Length: 143
Image: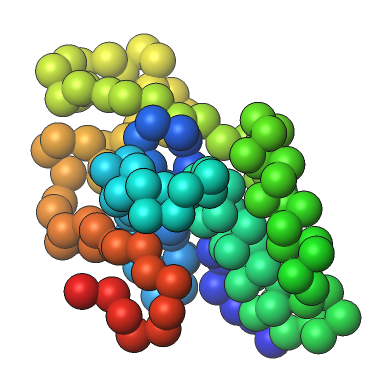
């Protein structure tokens, strides 16, 4: 059974991006939303909590019941990330800030990725707005 790829990419101080490939769905949790969550949960690293919950969800949704994580494993992932560990199942993940100025003129450094860069660049088609998610501890309690 072919499924959708799911990516969760977080960078402390910037937020977390959720990306599902088929159908294409994108959402983000802003750094401000994470800070607000941490403020209401003293001692909790919001980024680590998001990562652990996302990993647990992915393990539980992979169609293989034996890969589901228990609460101890989830807490272990959260502790690792809160302690500063980087955890990735990707071959690489690059995170940075970009500006629109000069985007379309840097052709030399864009090969062989010119096509996807044009699609996501300032002159690319607008597909919609990024869904800005909120954090909530209870189902259906998000504002």
